[in-house]
Image (cartoon, rainbow, N blue to C red; front, side, top):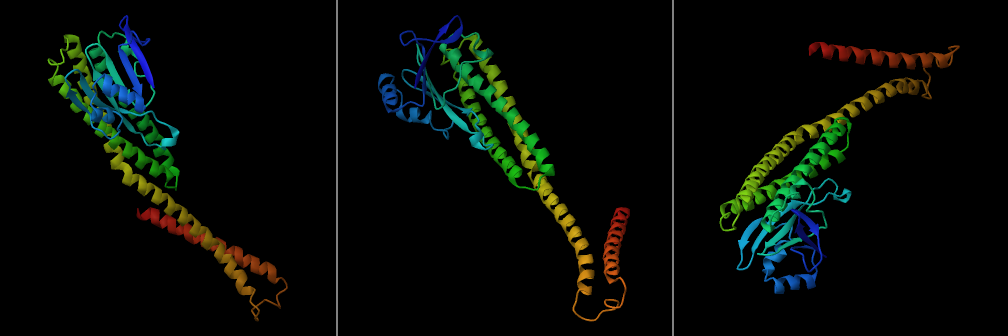
Length: 311
């Protein structure tokens, strides 16, 4: 699918085919790929790299254009089950037009960042900056989900929430790799700023992008380290909850076994004291059963008090 845009009054707006400067190809089909290869002389490997989620970010100078591959976070869906994925975007900057190749149909020119656009190179840099903001937003969401799962783990005895945390930790690893990969691309853009004929405003914008990407890396590392460091503790919490439940069940089982033992003894088909001659054998047996429960509870309470005192 093809969407076309044009820079009008320092803003990126949708335009018709004749005046379009920016061409956005969303998951192009074979015919669109063939058109890109033949009409714009785009390298086939670079074109395929723009659609490969495992491709690393890079900068390449071709005879008639500049090719850039960078990483961006994919929009999260409930079907992903707490796994935040990463996608690739291809930017092909020509003298008078810009080609963007991506896999998902998303709003890439929205936000305050695109309120004052001056050139196609400016659009290119702002697209990279918007991606960093997108990563930061996803990191905040991951942190919020992590806090929610922590509270559920404290009272849960299931492994479901713990597995969700493992998935989030895996997502952070992917994000860290993608953000570091983008950092290498941004550094190459800084080194080749003269070759790209950047203006002073472009250089200042690129410096801001470098700072924001560095902050994004640090934030992702903090979240990843915290999550990885506490995984063992959270696993221990789940195990401890199960132990507490088993302990409670054992107490209940023993408490039930005491009166059951008394009643079972007097239910045996043999001669027992007071089983036949006593005027009220039933109530005597009930009294013994209740007494066994009271004795057990008294013994258990004393044991707990002694344990607390020793601590």
